[in-house]
Image 1 (cartoon, one colour):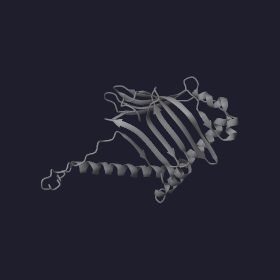
Image 2 (tube, one colour):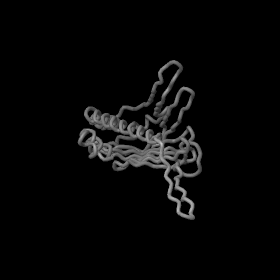
Image 3 (cartoon, helix red, strand yellow):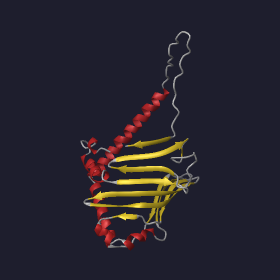
Image 4 (spheres, helix red, strand yellow):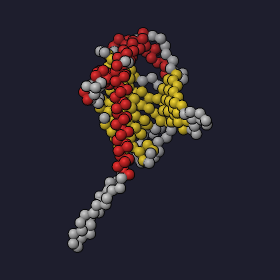
Length: 248
């Protein structure tokens, strides 16, 4: 990510990206019960990397034999970001990730019952222990998002979250830092980001339309001239790759 590329048109959004996004570090993976990884996503110094492996629309393990991804997985993650002078985040995060597929619903369900290791300023570590364990106890942190349809009704997007906390000084400290980041985003930065996203998706639609039109146009066959006494050379073809990564 290079904020300088959008700074002329969206200066407030560029400033927010430079202040918060470029200083963030994260790594996420989706693994099955055997430890095989089906997705890796990371961000460091503004560089985003996504690795997946697919075959005929199905996600496969990044290494090893081809087998379809199960509906029950584990989400693993590390995340840190800077807010003002403080670095906050977590590592060794693990949660149950389930894919819901029914006749009328498609959804992702996330349940977090294991407390991660926290990255907090020194003042926060002294106030830490019990208050930040509370959300992961009992039912844990639950998040679900999906789409549902029914006969004669409009398709709806649903999301639901359950989180129990214990009021404490450390939670107020983290909440204040979060409010700072959100407050810096709301207003001009948010409006400029939405304008930038409209430009991005409009360009993607235009590219797809141009790609589709190009595929529909008939292509003239090209043949190499046949040298006397020689057969024409076969044109080389590429086998589609089912393992790819993208860096932004």
